[in-house]
Amino acid sequence: VGLAYEKKADASVNAGASDDKLRELYMLGFDACRVGRYPTPTSLGKLAAYHHSLRIFSKATKYFDPPLEIIELPFEGKKLIGYLQKPSGVVAPPVVLHWGGVDGWKEDRLRIARAIMAAGLASLTIDMPGSGENPVLYGDPLAERTYFNWLDYLPTRADVNGKRVAVWGGSFGAYWAARLAFVAANRIKGAVFHGGNIHFGF
Image (tube, rainbow, N blue to C red; front, side, top):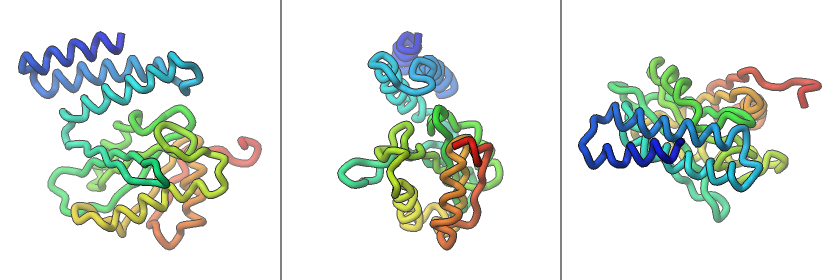
């Protein structure tokens, strides 16, 4: 189903369809493939669906408004990938660095990104350790270093205020927001623990 929508969207590009129509078709393709990988790619078929979803999502982002920038950071011989969107008409906005949990990955946080931008803030969506395209496993005792890479990177950009960053973790990802509030208290302006596990949840 997802690949059929992708094929239709590709044909519509050549036919000169509007940005709104192309975004809709590609996102329908993405959503179908996302369901195919959900909650996590535990088989070859689900892994293939996940890779399809990433490809189709990347095509869809060309038609987003505000634009979505796909950032790739070198990291220990691999790379970290994030999605940056900035609110229209705001000069050098502060940034909310945010992520989901075990099954809701960075591509799934567009609604939250819109809410962040509506508040005049930039949205940088990433995957927590052990999920999505994050190359570090959850059980790595120093997994928070992936977040440190983003906190090092953001101040190098002139188009956002990378010295004013808050973090927001959703579901199981809320754990990492709480952890950063402890290990990076001097580097962030706030941390949102949104529906995360405590006590016997672990």
